[in-house]
Length: 223
Image (cartoon, rainbow, N blue to C red; front, top):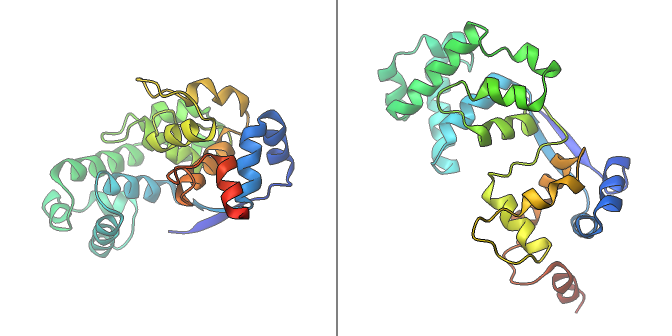
């Protein structure tokens, strides 16, 4: 899949604004520094990849994607709609995922899901359109907004990792409902996506699972 790179520099105006609006997030950004994020350029393939990847390992998903690509020749709604369910299942898709891919292909071909209209649509309208497809839930639609459309103000409150990172960064009291982001995201608009990317990175680099708070982690590195 063709990708482009999003580079986030702590000195750039958007991030400087975030750091001023939320000094705690600013401390995390200063700690993590510059980020480079890959954005997906083919919206249809992005959604197919998301469907294939649901509830399986990264390695298994990659293997299935390559088998589907070999069968179809390319990831387009026309090519995938020509494949029989038996062929999709033979490539490793479950019966339900084969149905999801077929439903997505049909809706795109019928323009019920129109990627060309998305740039002029609000986040919520894009989510409504995408979740009309079988197997595409709100979380998948929000990831599409971030990594396919490059929308700047998306915070997925249904993302367990983001909730966990917020609990750690702000040293919050545990809640039974685990709703931490809901009380924080107003600080980050209109750059909620950037906040999300740094929170995810804090997990990727092991900070959240270190057993140390952000300040303690920094002190440990200095010793």
